[in-house]
Image (cartoon, rainbow, N blue to C red; front, side, top):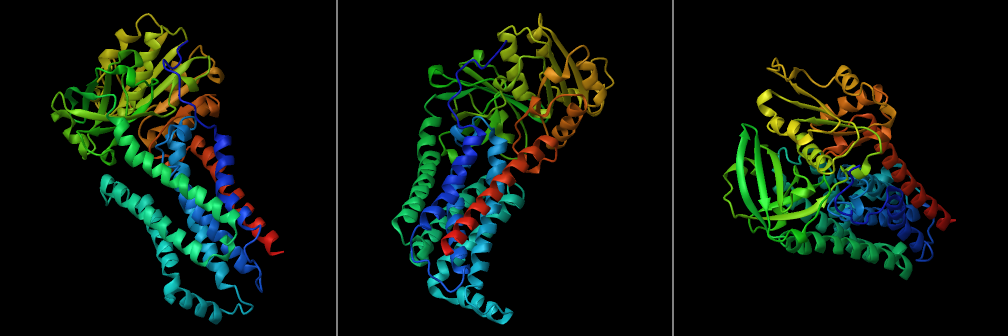
Amino acid sequence: MARSAQPRPWAFSGRSLAALYLILTAGPVLLASLSGGLNSPTVYPVLARATGVAALAMFMMQFATSGRFEVISGRIGLDRTMGFHRLAAVGALWMILLHVVFFLFRGRDGSLDMLWQRLVLYITTPDLASGIVAAGLAVILVITGKRLRGRIIPYQAWRIGHGVLAVALVALSLQHAFTHARFMADPFGATAILAVALLALSSLLVVYVLRPLQAFRPDFRVESARTLSPSVAELVLTTDRPDRFSFAAGQFVWLTIGRRHTVTDNPFSIASAPSDLPRLRFLIRNAGDMTAAVPRLVPGTPVGVDGPHGSFTLDEAGPGPLLLLAGGIGIAPVMSLLGELAAARDTRPIRLIAGARGPQDHVIRGEIPPLMAGLDFGAIFLADRDGDREDYETGACSPDHVRRVLQGLDPGETTAFVCGPPPMMESAVAILLEAGLPLDGIVMERFDFDAGNDAVCHAVRRRFIALMATVFASVLSVALIAAA
């Protein structure tokens, strides 16, 4: 039975991450409530200060959940990490809204006219400008992160701007908190917030200072680059220092072409097996950005490799049969898994369903039969169009395809690895569950997790919302107890 060829770096479990997040966001509020001059005519100022402290801690935690730290995403996957990152940003924005609303009710007069007067006063008071600007930046970050990322704004420009605005948001919020928040007047709460700020600063230093140095340490360079089809290119890297890099089949890396800063990097799944080192192979779809230049890369061009990352690995599989479903360029990490299984001469039943737009888009179709020769392997190749050849079938993956490849196998003992476009993955999950596979027997890693509308994504999103609810309940409960 194949397992990851290299030992995986240690990473927090999902439950440990949830507990840490609760401690680092609601914890400062608890410590700040121990003292700090909480006397006020109503409970609202206490609630306002508590939610302000929590919002600041939540936004600072966004730096640690950016998806670039294997210690965080190693066991839960990049998709879940980024899904939580985006949901937590919305949660922090709601916490800011509560912070403002509670302050509007700070006096005994709660009439609409008085609330409006207080709002105008807050907005126009120069001393509160840093807080007002920080709240505006929070709105901009959430909206652009969800609606404009890689669409209206090019991804790399959005990424740089997103990082700069996030740093400005936290800096202004810290100034606002320590200048105006009596809730932070005690050493306990202030120390806790400074500790979270130090964590955020450390995250920035690792991503933008340490990682650029580490990415070029394995000394990878282009060995070859060529076009495999009108939409797919192959990039092969090689190194004279393979001892400086290891990975597990199915993982991905962030590539930086040339001696540029890694802020320009892009994520790509590795299509080769660990046994293929010192070569790394990538199948890259032309998405109209830097990917269009891949076939023109000159041999010898240096390439920064940040990674490995991801949990789309055989460590997630049970001891039973394996079913690999790949759509389009999703065949890249699946090829890595197949290579690892073939190198280990794995004896489990291995089944593959691979789909593409047309037969010409199955760029590595001819490699698979000889690779898997001698193993318990079967495959169905699908094409959305022009699939009338004998070795292809027309159409998307259907319940009938899954039923056929699982014939004679126990679905309840099968692990399915699914990778491809979001619509294909959502459809595949429904088909797999209908076929009898358990929910925890479906392994996915997607870069658009928050767009997912399948049962796996729904289950994970419910856990995220439950954690956010726990944070809100803890913050409000601590504030009410402190006010009492």
